[in-house]
Length: 427
Image (cartoon, helix red, strand yellow):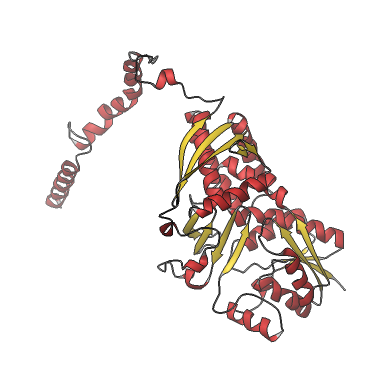
């Protein structure tokens, strides 16, 4: 009998999919759970897959690969989708796709299956990645193919004695890994509704922290990658888990975002990403110290493109290779330490230092040790203003018939009204 490898999370969709694939495609199912810091009892998840009907259940450790080859490059790039989302789920998908393909090859499977819906982003990320890495494998997406609503799925699971933890009273769809936690569905589909307390699992309510004193952390970076907290060197996954816990206690990392999905719709997403918020803030602060103005300006453009690329499922692309090469080059001097202050719902940068710093006290100070040549400013200002004054004299002032304030909107309105009256009179 043919075999399909299923990306199994233990949730509603993939639990129902084990039974459904057997019925629909007459295939055996190998359930593969990828550990990217899911914070679940993975042994229990694997056992549940066998109980439901999988012929084999595997746990693949992807934590260090996830951090080293997906999270850190995205952090170095400053990749945050639409200025809000640190891309936790989106970053994990290309890794999971790669590992699914590897298992499919090892097990002689003819298909790879996932639990993505037909109007989400993950279906694109999985399908594009799998097609790129193994175009010969069939892709099965049960949730995209069947005609069941979420309530129908819950009923199907009950009918077939499929053990799940989702109920009609707890309808949230949750995905989490080391870099963040994503929550959708239920009351969250109303963008006017305030997220209820039970949505959050990693972060405390900032309004309940009146008696919690602020704390400080020093984060050391080497070539744009965090390597130590308070001078204690740590593995990447440990460092992220530590900051998730510590920043989460202060309610840092809550994100309520109306997001533009790749498939053309808007969705309301709740994210918890304490470590990502702190590390992105600290990394950006260190870059302000070590990158030039022009590097910073252009890197902001690259960061937006890098974030879009990740969100849109184009990790395995030539464009990604091109952008990654630029990002890595920018990070060669992004080494140093940033001090952050964690308080109620807030991460504040309060210090930064680097041996590669472009900050010069002698040039910046206003005291007696000032080394800046103030006289040079006069010639600089004249040359800087030259194209503006030339264009204003030749084009802007004559075109509106005013030799005064170009930004005087009242004068503009008067001029427009007079022109309209003249045109009506001629007509």
